[in-house]
Image 1 (tube, helix red, strand yellow):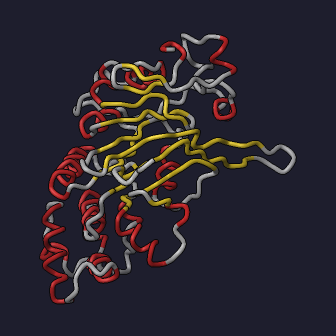
Image 2: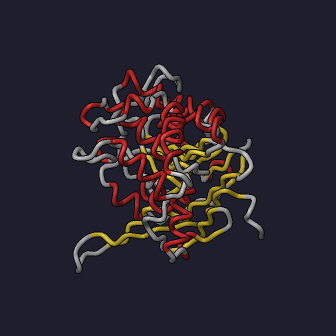
Length: 325
């Protein structure tokens, strides 16, 4: 099968970690049989949402090539990223796929001027052939995130607010003209009054630079506002995915319904501030042989406890639940 028309193709991806001592070791399936696709022709914002421990960050690190999966397929523009070995190929991949971290203060050392990171990115990735052109490129990218070269030049990270630093992180990422940005909780450490400006920025970048974004969050309000499609993760599995309006306005999976109930309505004005923690022992959900939500589900059946449900397609959505078999 030709996957060259896919920006990102993930099939049956699994990552297993060992936990506990030598005598009492257990396997944690952090990413469980995950499949998803991003189209290469049309940029989109695809959200991975779920509570703490759902596997969102592990999946993101696999996509970034930082964690090797235990099994499954992950292709970027038709290339198996687990087989990238040469420095030249790795440079190509990291130019194409850029991360945005949760904490903008971790991106920049307090000992260095911010401009050095921007300058080095442009030079190291051969974005310009003539060094005299670099400042024009940097100013262009800074203006795309609402800043300018004159505002940044000569300043250290402590001279910027958290929101400004996150904008600088995004500017640094788009210097390489990536096709995909992986943003892990990019607004969770930003002042609430500034979060929507950063969220709007991702939407603008998608349109201006035709860059797709994998947006990782536990905030359903911003997820509803920013996303084209959304996948709801639970203990390593995607339990429901599809167009964001359908998934959040009329959820099918009982777990998605639970998450929606944590906020009155999915709007940009109401934020889900707390990560839901209803399970007494998360380890039991990770190691359960059936549906990971069986212990909490009001509709649980005997088969839910013993056999993991397969993916079913209902109303433009993929859902893993025996209620729809």
